[in-house]
Length: 219
Image (cartoon, rainbow, N blue to C red; front, side, top):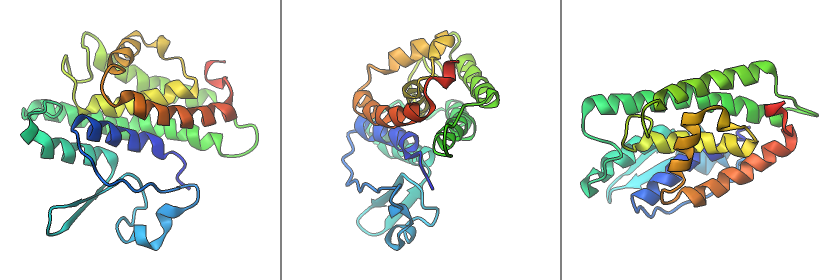
């Protein structure tokens, strides 16, 4: 069962706020299995959230995987003059690298911990869990050394993707103070529009995980 939709939907919510997009949002109860009902699997056989259905007046364009949706929306909103997804091919390559790292490394480590929390009685974070997470965060720390944001000194879409992951960790009870560059970047990101509202979703989920795992992150 998918138990960790919050991270993958948070970065999507950040962008629709930043770009002043007002989509029709349909909430699914994943714990109740609504994402596996036929009306949704016809749209997305992967059964994951978020899923975007963009109608241009003629046809439905369907896209899932939050990072792909972020790139699509950033590209589509270029006409509004946004700089979150610059035209420079090298800058975009770095943005993509960061997004792929989040999806394949940091997000996966967080998901491992979330799955552990729901795995049974008295779940405990292992030394291996902590080490895997530490390695992923050390890479983030290296991205931010000498820079304000993940790709340099200008904010891009990958900062919102990483914020979704990091704020979830914070609400899990993880002490990001161990990583000074990440800590400073985290405070810097909190000033942006839409962060507060989306952070509340991460807090709700994080408190649920923290209630199951206690303070074992920092033991």
